[in-house]
Length: 349
Ligand code: SAH
Ligand code: SF4
Image (cartoon, rainbow, N blue to C red; front, side):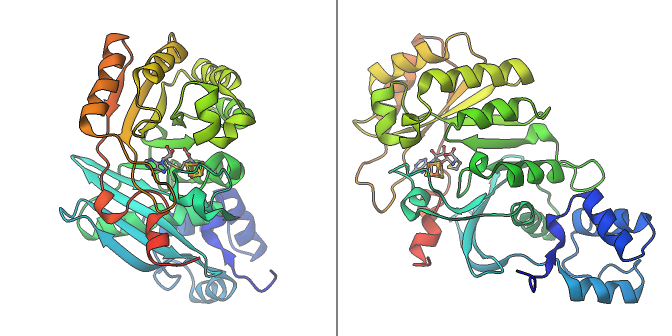
């Protein structure tokens, strides 16, 4: 461990300050470096021209700015979506996706290498858990896409923690990354433009509700009865629907923010009217919105995403019962933009 360079993207502003103070630098240096990292998006210390040369050299020796190397990129045919396979310093690989849709420029970030939650339909789940990402490794994915966009005279507008991994199982790093990306003198992404997606870890949802953040919480529901959810989202056996919905109600009460429920429609599994009714019952009275997405194919799951007729039929029941929803088009199915799929395609891990 001791030979590993310090990753500057792992540091909060006050940690950067104490590090630079320990190098006998004046306190304003931290803000200078901070701006190089999060405003100018410098990818080396050489670029930080307002720092003394000796300091730049020392920083380059002891620390590193570069955490990710792009090893593969695939683009959708319309050019709107791009998915990158990124190699970390220890050789592990993760994926991150950039989506352009109307005026939105959304980066979908990974929070872990693999995932231990075992959802059978998910390519990342099929891989198992390998390790947590550090806060800097999460942040660096957003910085990477911001550089790509800046090259085109464009900028990032939204971040979703919806790539590989379960963000609430890597709570500290995910929260630190959210705070750093929304820092008012740094990256300055509005918290309302950040979404965290969770499989439904109940104690962490209660904890998140008390962080005084303005982010959107998305809960990957996929089933509205315990019998079915136990099968397709195994963590439901530990955190069944009753405590999960208590946690969601708590989140809404504490934050005043609307919750999103993700529902991947799977033919013959969760796309019938019985589930639609159960869903409507569950979210009655809750400030919530449902996102319907036909399941994306993944290698080890032999079920199919619902076709348009079944999606419409499911949505019609929600209409009838007054449940607000959006039907999402899976952007990037053709480029395996579903979580974990590029890594599998490349045969890594
Ligand atoms: N672990 C978190 C965030 C990463 S997964 C979570 O589960 O919420 C991001 C989203 O992609 C989740 O809603 C997940 O259920 C969904 N997902 C995973 N595999 C999918 C697939 N094959 N088709 C459609 N959605 C999928
Ligand atoms: Fe993990 Fe989310 Fe995939 Fe489930 S859906 S295995 S929680 S990444």
